[in-house]
Length: 339
Length: 209
Image: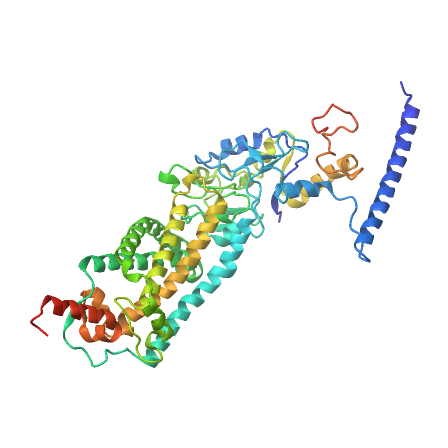
């Protein structure tokens, strides 16, 4: 048995020796580090052991995942920094810049209308009409269009409403509006998917690009260098079709991921789905303004195709001459007696 | 005014989950929501540590920032609360929170979200203090009675500290100073140096390799 005095002495000696050792180690390692770092101040040679713990918690160079008694997809994660990145993207990128895109497009279209006016049919209307769209085509188009406008409005209210509408109506009233928007948006999302799929199936074959479209694009659709040739759909329409189909499907898929969170998608997937959904939506809405403009005010005679299904033959001759020729050939083949 | 914070001392937490149980019982939390959870890292290995996490009541709360209807508010004590009557159940706060604190009841079809629920620091909600409506929606309001959250009160080892940030950090600082030598002395990592690694007693602790 050690007497108390010798234990004390031993502890004291132990303390001195260990301090000396620490000092030597510190000086030795700091000089090595200083050498490595050149003339910079040497870093702490004895790091705070808590640093390792908190790096592990933050899953920086983590060796293992956490475990918890609580059931849940992300429950075993203490911290997921991507939540902050999501907030950053939303508040610094999406919400500030979306209005610029949307309003900018409207301004651009207004300027185009003021400068160019309504593009008339060359030689005016002939009075003769050609069938362009079947009833099914028109029904599907308007089904998708109306749903799109509804989803766009409700979606934009959810995105920008807090800043644009809430100050006007107050929190309680806007909460009610936003709740209705959210339910409506969620309810009409899947029907929109049905519409997009039907529309894609119906029109995909007519939207395959070819050389005619390349030439059409090189002349910018007639903006300079005379009106280029075009088939049933010109290159601009084909681009719009594929944009709607691809971005629309992307919106639907990301929307479904968000709508049904019960399949154990973690926060990471939901964040990315919402990012894709937001960006895709803003892009598609912006471009849809252009589509709506051309299809109504921008060009004389274009709305007829989707509202009645028939187009004026002069309109067809001017804008879709190859298709017009095909139709004329078919008509003369059917009726060999009429010229 | 006080700024209310939680701090979980990783050295003391023994993963008993008393905080979890106390919270669920006191606040009658909706089905599917887990306001507080205990996470263990390096389970079974040297350096196993547990931490209890619920809402961190951030000074710059990401949940409040992304909410499309702005239903969050911060009380004078720094507690982040929200109004369930305004909440539309969109889920953005859940995406934005690094800790997954805002959660949604899972009793709707296809987990369709109801109103968001989260740790309230036992401070209730915007309803009148101690009213039946407040209790049903948000759980008990202990802060209005001058009490601290039940999770911290129930903690068996006083690992989970809750209260004014200055007081909490003072307590923790004293603990660190008292523990300091055993961990810092040899500059060892947290796996190898702690109260649980009894110095030099080979075979007596699980953190011996």
